[in-house]
Image 1 (tube, rainbow, N blue to C red):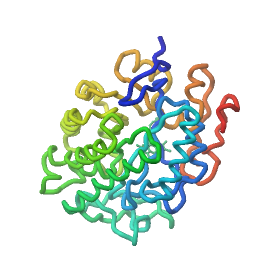
Image 2 (cartoon, rainbow, N blue to C red; image 1 turned 180 degrees about the vertical axis):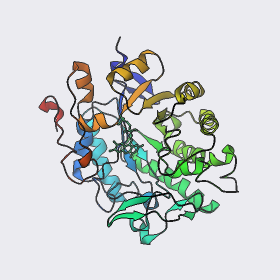
Image 3 (tube, rainbow, N blue to C red; image 1 turned 120 degrees about the vertical axis):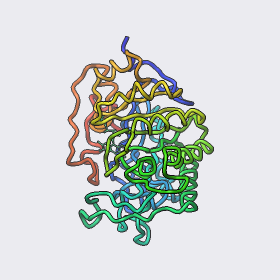
Length: 356
Ligand SMILES: Cc1cc2nc3c(=O)[nH]c(=O)nc-3n(C[C@H](O)[C@H](O)[C@H](O)COP(=O)(O)O)c2cc1C
């Protein structure tokens, strides 16, 4: 039997299918981090996903790393997100907000008062970042003090509260792709000598404290985490990734999390076999899937649910298309991060009923 269309328990929710929409930054917020009206339309169009995970949302202004990305710090941001959750719930969907603090993957021009980006250590990422005035070199970040780390953990806790007040069904910690949580976890970006650095027990501490804070607000069964071992994106490299991620996932046990979302890119290591037995919540696999590979993962019992990114971006009615074996729209990379409706809310559904 095709398990994609069977229901599955994920924390407090029962999802009607096992097709989850991946978190995808779309840069359709205004410069104050407030999602525009279009954002509600975009997510509502995709409400037939078993679960929507939103684009990365900064918990506080210091977490912003990309132009026109949204936040969940101000009243205006929260009010706009409330419109989004209402639109998705009205269409029968469920959605988690992804909390994304970019840490050193940012630029003073994107931060309050031109502040330096923050990180565990004063180590500059290689390369450049897109800003309002074009590509600019990364800068050397400000290394967070222990007291400042406590402040960032508190920012995640407050962001979780605001997300729930705005009607989200839960929150996901973005601990992948080289952003702040992975900057703490990985040896190349964390050279601290205090309790937040050194051996893996120290490097994992920040992620575990953030998750505890999020779980304290939401209940562990409304909190998920995304990791991408060995993705090596944004200048992140870990000296012993199998040990690091084994330790981290073992420590998640006490938190009773809803899910562990593992997206693998460019590694030959079978992290799913390594990590899944260590985690007792729902195990989500994403990254480069198509319908048949997703069905195979579910049939082999390797995942509880499967996560689709660009296919959901381009196909608002992806579950229906898979169900019918219908052809898929092709994602247009040129409009992934551009403002406006084009390449955002104008991908056609099979029937107009999916358009709102
Ligand atoms: C336009 C775009 C934006 C993305 N933004 C995010 C993001 O904000 N947070 C995140 O965790 N992953 C982000 N990703 C990665 C996706 O969540 C997903 O892991 C990736 O697209 C692989 O899945 P796919 O092969 O099904 O597209 C983004 C991907 C795309 C295509």
